[in-house]
Image (cartoon, rainbow, N blue to C red; front, side):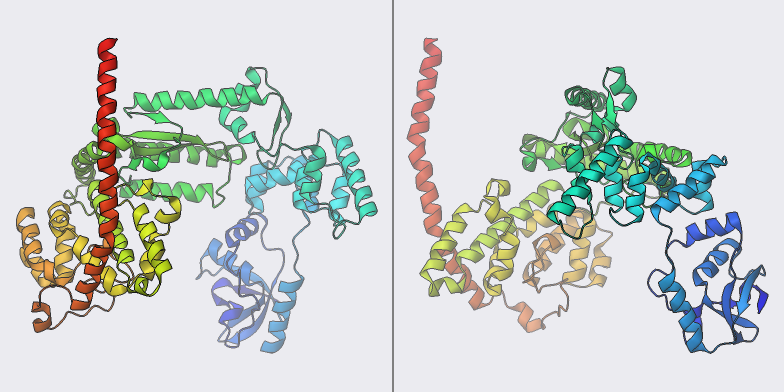
Length: 616
């Protein structure tokens, strides 16, 4: 029986008491697209429903359409929906839902192409087709691009001889004749050699067409087709599904890309950055500012709106965007540039620079705030001052009080890392297991000799990258004792932001004590922390490892008063640390001996150089 039911009286099948909707995964997928289609074309097919009592009906088949109708008209709408009532029990209604979900299939891509091509012949634009059927303009364009495939290729795709990736590869051929020739050749080879399951894949097609694996298409997008062609370059074949275009002159294209990168670097220098270049070979030696450019509340709201327009496709290219998306993309870039401009003051730019690169999609990517190795200290000092100014200016613009810093400086972070690495070296040398294995003892001393706390990137990668793993395996008592000795509380509390010192007091003592002294000067607060936190075993988060059980760790319980009053580490820890220091002495003596041995040679070299200069 066919009836009209107010939308507000329809219930989802999975909300029915016995659950008559078979679909669980993907219930909400593509609802916006379906809503766009229903809004453009109206309801074509009735929902299959059963009575649910009280004038309500549960939907056995058509739950996604119900969700789309709610999106269009609102959940409490009186808009009438066409329904077909089946006088069935819940078991039968569930079978209807299951049968529909299993047997429903999307149109084959070739059928989609032919259908969309008819719509375009009737005067509909790509944007109108996309809107009516809830698809992206990019999807419509790519389906219409199948018109470049010969009839033989389309028929082979329908028959299952090739898949979608192979079909896309065929579009890289010069013309239909080449497509058909490659198809026949691959069919013959499969018949003769019995390849796999008898299907032709994209790799087979690309090999025959000699598609360039180096893929210079991203450079073409970066340079611009018009610019390349203006310099007498030609595009031999355009890739309608990616950036694997074939060009006549790769050297010319790379030259134009280099020139455009150079222009970008010149512009960045004009904007005040001390340098702008490609990422250097010794990039690991460079520092980085702690600035994290942040949008205002209004900017973030607009960014969210623009991202909604652009959609979820991270590889969407400007050439595939609708007019609305192109405008959104340009506005988003302008907002991001504005955020960068105000986040880095002229003083910060003078102490740091940028790296530029071309990403796989042909977009210019810039990494801001890179610091040359020799300028890290000076840049950190400038950054601390300027970061406060930037934060204060943004707060003033939003009518808020100036925020207090909640992050430590790069310099302090580096010193904490050196303390952690030193403690790790101590822990390796003092591990109790070394006494049981001469081989392990030799290996430990070898590794300790490679560890350089104040220059971590000078260590072999095999050691540096394994330090976190090594720390987890170390004896807990030995490592905790080493960490307690290496941590410099005066350096930390006197240089950390006020908010972090108060947080330390809250964790190690109690929140009330932190509130009591919060109004005091920064100097008074850090001195109080130094006097009262030393015996609690508190460590900053940068020094906490899996072995840390002190204040602020999960499940931490403050020790009883008598236990807390005992100074120093437990005797087991002290003996382990003593053993570690003893094990390190030969390494220190060897390093001192090497330094002393080099001294006469260096002195003689200096004298020889001076004598040579004088003679010249």
